[in-house]
View (cartoon, rainbow, N blue to C red):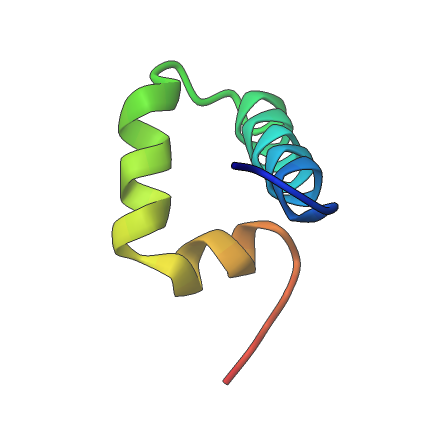
Length: 52
């Protein structure tokens, strides 16, 4: 059972990520989200977060 705010927060983060990909002109969102999952540092850089 889903409880608390965690599911809502995760949905919001996913929607933000998809919006960033759309703004960047990504034609294939499914492929891009898989790439973000496999290379999280690239996804964070795209979002403007430089984490070493």
